Length: 292
Length: 306
Image (cartoon, rainbow over all chains, first blue to last red; front, side, top):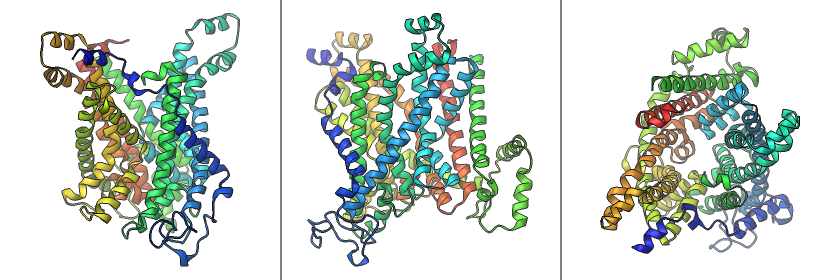
């Protein structure tokens, strides 16, 4: 009993052991990135070309499979492994650029809102609150319905949907930063508002932005996959993991499980890794965010 | 109190105004709204009718005024596909979404609360680690993939459950699990931290000093108080569940609002898409307002602040 009560009084986060560097997740993320960037070198086949004669081949280790198509083929006879490899490129491209765009907009508006205060703050925060209330996926679907799906549009749409997450947090940080001594000194020294925001505030919120960005990477990748799955994401025949899942669904009821299982595992690995790395970064870089 | 409610209410009204303005502007600014609001191949008479209804030749703010008037009357236009008013469609699907959300909520609480308590009572122990893995998986596995794997397992391999449709309890099980999965992890995390906070408080120490058995301390004294924030979150999450089930409902062909949205994009039925987004956002703004007012009623510190 006594030991238990002692254990209970430990701070909540301590048992999570997030201080250990997440080696495996980092390796996975780096590998997915490299595989995506150098997809041509890794993929054994053309991801968009298949032969109808080789439709629905199972993975190599299942009866009927061949070493030529390690993870089998889909309904058009395209090599699943090659499509996964090129799909990594789509996820990486959309994921990273959307996170960076959203981060740039959110951080900028968060700094302006927090530092200037007054009506500027009111306007930006009311818009942020409103957009936060919109269900992210529905909002994204609405936007694709207007502008039409393409890889570039998806990036812009995801940035438009997710910048609010940054703006909220960054604004909160700026509110406490601007009361700090060094900012007051900069004001006394006659720095302009823009100089202070750029030189003194921005460098101090970058850590939080990076932590948030890593955590958002998982969210963005899942949203992109969901959009592609629904048919409003990356247009076919380009291989995207979500699109592969949607295609896989067609062969699922007759037992072509590999078309569903493998793309899902790829999405899961990437999201899980981003979350683990993000959690670790949060503890390492940003003590203030630990309580989130 | 009244002051607080009035202020909170005005914030929500501003949010709703901005919400409609956002939707309105995105549709107007990105091109000719007639291409979105009219089906391909519409006659010149139809085009003129829409131009007339929304006054598309007039300045933006006049158009917005017309748009708001329609929306406030509950007129979201007619569905191209179903040929019926969009609001009617929406309301006919709402009960299904609510049913699915309730089932998913029951599931997520049944999993989330006990596992959160176990994790909090034995911090650093086996259950805590298991809970940590579970919550990470819950937050990382996309719900639609969970749904597809469930179908592979229970419909294709085992043949126990129907893979799609609605009507019986059996149809409800897999979509509820797939939708509730993520929320179970969220509820577990909150239960854990809420329990830990309560277990560290003075009155729990007192209960222990009195010599109450540990199970009684946890079950009777700690559990009840730790549950309050979890149930609040569950209230908000129920509304969120109704609005994020797009992919799960699509996977299982569950005839709810999410499925309606999916049909909207597949059939290029723009009025449906617009209404689902607008009503979804409205629902969440209203729930946030209700929760805030409820909290202010319970906790005087909130309503007296500023």
